Length: 355
Image 1 (cartoon, rainbow, N blue to C red):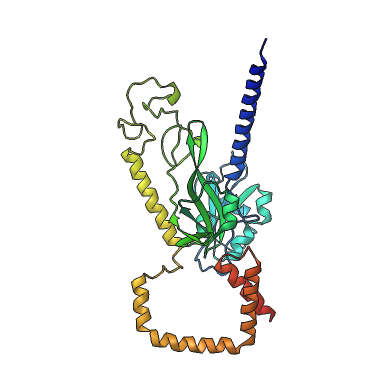
Image 2: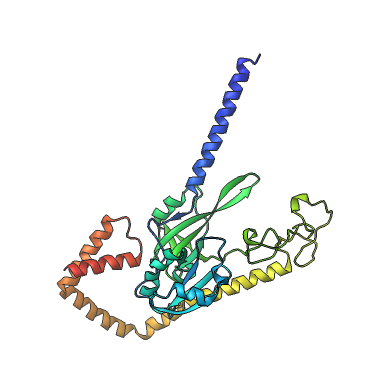
């Protein structure tokens, strides 16, 4: 018969298991990527972009919209206004290019999408930038960070980087922050602590079925390749004593960063991503260096002072502007939501129109 001590031990073990399970559930909620409530990608009305692309794909995974006859696909969008041109992206996806932001935004709700069972969305690179911030306390949840972080650019999402250790997933002190717009701020603030923002470079996409690049195993039609010996079997069934990369033939795993082909792909991806950032940021001038600021300041000190006096006089004597400034300051002081310059500008214009 089991003793009382055995029963107590089992009860303690059960409590421990429940505690570990509850902790894992809490962490899954705590570190779940957080996106601003009600947010959806859209182009701003004052955008100066030359083109406004929208991606379109079928809502049914088995239908390859990019492989369909383009003349047939064109009929889907016959009633859509403002389409400048159409492009094939890949087997699953096409891109419609608009010349106006409002036309691109309106298309996202067009009835043709429902009729032909399609899904339309604005590419993230056109309206968002992702930055990486390091040394953020691990105890803070993504939702908490979203509420406490502030920046000159609007923050729309926070994600914690996680790392798998044996059978557990642990949080890291690095986070990624999604900003609205096509420029990254230099810094971000957490309770008045300043953190530098680095550009996020997406990881290289590698298929774990065929070990090749730029696609995932879910859509891979190639044969299974072992990441250890390059044989036609799964790596778990591998019995080879030596390593062989299926991409370069070297004595390493196919997923190793030491693979020269993978290293070249990584570098190419970085350059391609940097080019996309540069193209989409063409309308936003880079910030001048401190030395340039100093030179300009000394060269135009007298002119600046004269203009400042005129501007100051205009503001002081204009009751409408003064009233709007005061009301804006009161609104900022009473609100926890106004954290970016765009929000402050919006509040100021709102009060200015009321006066």
